[in-house]
Length: 298
Image (cartoon, rainbow, N blue to C red; front, side, top):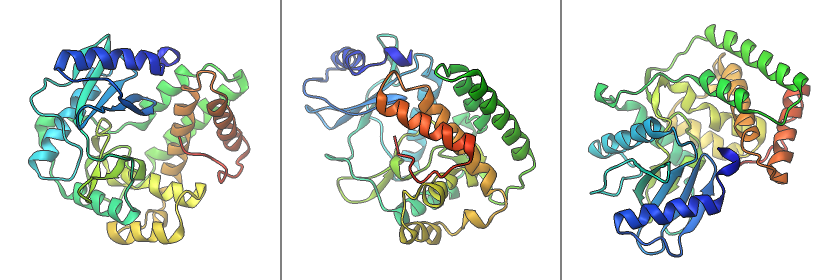
C-alpha cells in the first residue's frame, strides 16, 4: 500500500473524512506524508491524521486511548477533538482528529524533551489501556518482509544483522524502571503549543517497556548523526537525569534503532530519488560500518 499512498489519495480520504464530521477540507496544509498523512485544516484548529496502513485500527485506537489517559493526568500532550467517535474508518483508511496545537511547525528544545519524558515516566499507566510490550523486532521483521529494492546479498546481511542484534538484546541488563513508554520519543515528536509550553505528539507507538528505549534516539541523533549539538544534548541529559551513553546496553539499542530507521525508509522510497538515495546511503553505512554523519532526517 505504500506506493499507493500519495498526497492525492490522502486528500481524497481527507475530503470524505471532513464531510462526514462537518469539517471543511478546503485549503488544508499537508504537514507530513509518511506512516501517516498529517493535515492541518485551514477552516478550524484541527489536525487530521490518516494512517497509511489500512490495518492500523488497533494502533490508532490505542493512540486515542493514550491521549484520553494523558488528558486525565493533565499531562502536556496532543489532545483529541472532543465529540467525535475515534478512530474512524474512511475510504478504507483509519482517521483520527486532533486539536491543532500550533499555527506553524516549531519543535521544542532538548531540555524540554527531557522534562516531558521524565514526567511521562513517573506516571502509572492504567491496565485498561491494554498496552502491548515494546517489541522492536516485530517492526524489524515487518520492514524486512516489505523490502523490495535490495539484492539477495543485502537482504541476507540485514537478516543476519537483525538476528545478531536480537541475541545481543537478550543479554542486555536494563537499569531504568519498566512501564509506559512513548516508543518513538525524539525531538520530532515534541512540539511547542501556541501558548508556549511543550507537548508530546504521535502517541500511536505507546507501549510497555524499559525507559531506555525513550532515550536512545536522542543519544543516537547526537552521538552518531550529529543532529544535536553537545550543549543541546547535555541539557537533555541534565533535565532527564540519566546519561544513556554511559550504560553498557546503549550500543545495542542504538544499533537496533539504526536498523529500524533504515528499514522504515527502505519500505517508503516509492521511486522518490531523495528517499532512494538516503536509503542506499544508510544501507552502505551499515554494510561497511561507515560514518553516519551524512545521514539525513526524514
